Image (cartoon, rainbow, N blue to C red; front, side, top):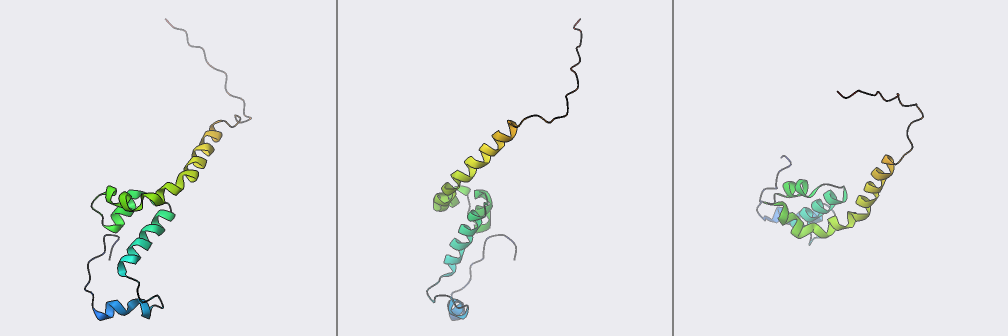
Amino acid sequence: MGAGPARRVSTSPRLLAWPRAAGLPGNLRFHDLRHTCAILLIAQGADPKAVSTRLGHTTVQMTLDRYAHLFANRDDEITTGLDSMYRATQAPAATTPAAPAQVVALR
């Protein structure tokens, strides 16, 4: 199975028994695993489009409607990244002297 959306499966007794067989709470639903997958992807820094594709949502908006509050927690990370990029541009120039500028006569 690829990275596409999960396929529907029947709710057979065997499927309903898998949480206990795995040592998980018996009331765990398959859909709970979808939410867990989405949350883990977002925590790893996956962008909304990648999460949307993985979950099989028809639009990114559907994903953001459900999980936007998890992306909001990344503001500090984004701000730090922008600050680091800015500071890198303000670093002193290398110690190698620059070549003298050439003057070109205008006609």
